[in-house]
Each structure stands twice: as structure tokens, then as C-alpha cells.
Length: 256
Ligand code: NAD
Image 1 (cartoon, rainbow, N blue to C red):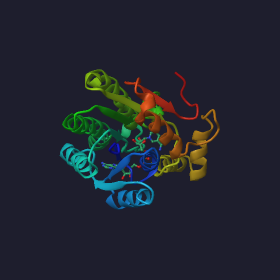
Image 2: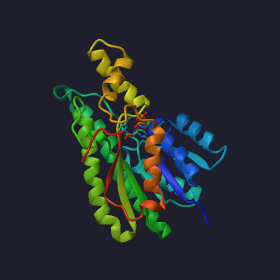
Image 3: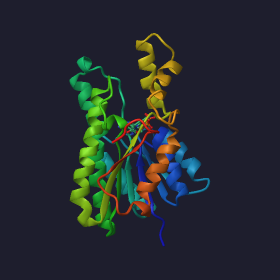
Image 4: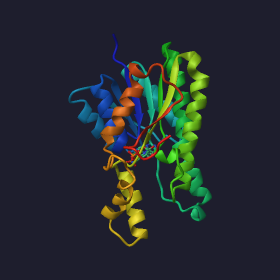
């Protein structure tokens, strides 16, 4: 049997890197996709000690680049079974400060990337003559509006909508589409958000992170590996009967 292949965007650091490491342990060959090629190569080098990975440079907001990167991964690793549209930006944007340029940037990276990733994966699944799994990064901020994150929250709500629609459209092709909704994860993105919150209140970064911990029932921030465990389920056979869902993996912040 040939090895299954997973293409993961934003895998040079943070949650994407943890997903790449986890899916490698699950037995997938990994395409580590990021516009930070050096970071992507480091992730791939670490995985290659025990598994199989290649680094692929891509700007996920550019449709042609996404198609080229997925095709390259499919050719070099021999197949594509799972795509994780994980890369995203999380700028702090008080609602009255949002500019058209910020809108373009954040929507094209966070939302455009999901459309292009889905399209590129469909093409590859069809070429290989099988279905597959599409997994998109939403957020607890895609379930409940978060203060000062009007742009970011909007994109993460959009991703849930796209996930539901694509699940309906693609079920006939044996393709499932799901999303994961992390809470407050210890990654460079979250450190940046906490820094801005702290700065606005004249406090240090530690205080900024603590502001988020108090809303988490389990009383601790999330490790990237907590999120990777959820994605492992969505990428594996145990989730075969699930599609169109957005799983909260947030330590108990949002209850539906
Ligand atoms: P991060 O900023 O630590 O890492 C993001 C990665 O994406 C980086 O390696 C970066 O180079 C890459 N990237 C950014 N723009 C790109 C582009 N245009 N093309 C290719 N690569 C690009 O972020 P993270 O915290 O690991 O977040 C990963 C995902 O999880 C994001 O979609 C984010 O919105 C979501 N999320 C994060 C948290 C959190 O608390 N950190 C919570 C909920 C959801």
C-alpha cells in the first residue's frame, strides 16, 4: 500500500508545525507548505529523521501558487489524501481602524486560501481517482465575536460557512470537509495578540496571556499539540462519517 499524503499550510511554525509532526506520526508523508521556506525546511528536516516530508514554498493567498504547490507535492510524494488549510493571519483591528488594505490582506490570506486550497485538492483527488479529506482552520473566534478582532473573527466565521457548503457540494465525490476551532494556543500569533492587548493596557505580555486563561474552563492555555490531536482525528478514518463540522478544541471556552 502506498503511503498517504497530507499537505499542510502554515506549517513552518505554531499549530501547522504541530499538525505536520502529528500527521507524520500517524503515518502520512507530509508536504510542509509555507511562504517562510526556511522555517518549512526546518520542519521537514525534523520530520525526515523518522518520517517523510518535503518543504514547499507558497503564498496561500495566490491561487496559482496554491495550485502549483499542491501539484508539486502530489508529484513528489506520489498522492494527496488530506489538505489542511491552516495558514492564517490574526491582526488586532479595533473596528473603527480597519482599512481597505487590511481587509484585502486578511480576507485574501484567511479566506481566499481556503477556496484555493479546496479547489487545488479537488483537482488532485480527481486526478488520482479517489476522494479525500479537506480540513480548514477556523477558531473559537469563528463561533463567537471576539473584541478587537472584527476582521479576524469575520474570516473565521466565513470559513465555517465555506466548510458547510463544500461538505454538501463534495460529498458525492467521497470528499469530507471539516474545520477545527482552536481556543488560545501558545504560538507566535497568539503571543502577538496578547502583546497588543497588554500594551493597550500598560501591562506586560504575561498579563496579556493571563487575560485569556481566565475564560478557559480547563484553566490552561492550549499547546499546539492539543489542536494537532483534533486534526489527527479529522484526517484519519475514525472521522469518515463526519462532514461539514467545525470542532471546538478550546479547553472549554465556547459551549454550543
Ligand atoms: P502563526 O502565526 O504562529 O503561524 C502561521 C504560519 O502561517 C506561519 O508559519 C506563517 O509563515 C504562515 N503564513 C502566514 N501567511 C501565509 C501566506 N500568505 N502563505 C503561506 N503561509 C503563510 O499562527 P498559528 O497560531 O499557528 O495559527 C495557525 C492557524 O490557527 C491560523 O489559521 C489561526 O487563525 C488559527 N488559530 C490560531 C489560534 C491561536 O491561539 N494561536 C486560535 C484559533 C485559531
